[in-house]
Image (cartoon, rainbow, N blue to C red; front, side, top):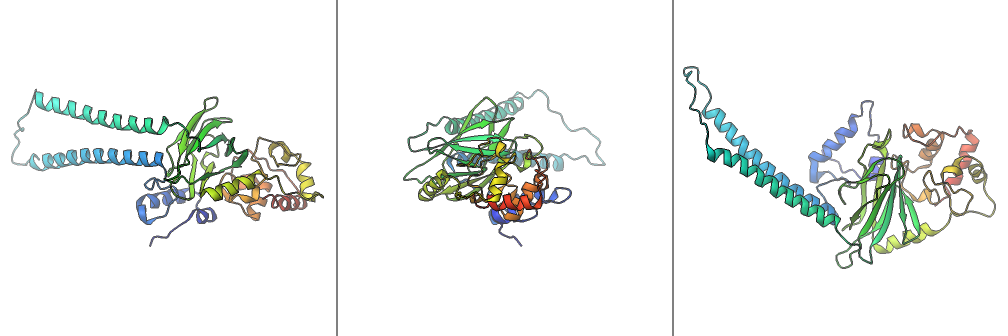
Length: 352
């Protein structure tokens, strides 16, 4: 019996075993179930113009290659059944040599097929890449780090981490989002299957892509280029919201951290440790840029670039021992006492 699974349920479910087989089985179930299985990464349910163009091209390629397979398989079955060797007949079948018609056919037909697919692919690439951003578009700078995502909105004056928020692009009022892709360290690849194709992030070589989501919801993606030990857990989430909700989110992100006039014990501990060298909290001495911005930490659904749900228990475990959630991550274990850890967690839970 098929079970509908949502993105939050996937986060709260143990999907790994000692051999890493469960993720493979889950992916296989999604591919086989198709329309019966609700998947936020279903490539057969495009929700943006670039993804739709790629999907249509994929159908054309599948149709052509499927027809070729059908013809070849039919001829193979015919030849095997009609010209199979009989035990009472050892005579060699008649051989055909030097047929110009046959040689011309199996040379010209593949060339025409390849040329047609090449032109169709080139057209899709041109249509998705050579697009000028309209005045009402949203500009985002996506920066890939080992192993998390940073999103900057230069025209809006806000930033986000791992969770990209974009407005819905309605037919009557198209609001596409144009994304400039940068890398802070090594090669990464930005891929949200239902919104667009894969585009690489290469150091010192900016790339660009765009999306215009036609439906609201959460769309999952991840880094599709091996970038180190935790490449597989460099996840990202795209939140497509109605314009009013998106504008409200922007205004909330512009606000500094909600701090009291009398700093809490957790805040004092946080600001006296190496935490402030990597993380930024607006309105405080913490202005690091190596790690994610924590100003609105508790407004996010996940931590560790989508590797765990953002709950008090997971947050405490993440600070105490990052490798327990994300082996190989670059965040160090701070070796804090239980008292200091509780105090810092209490402080971080106020950052909304």
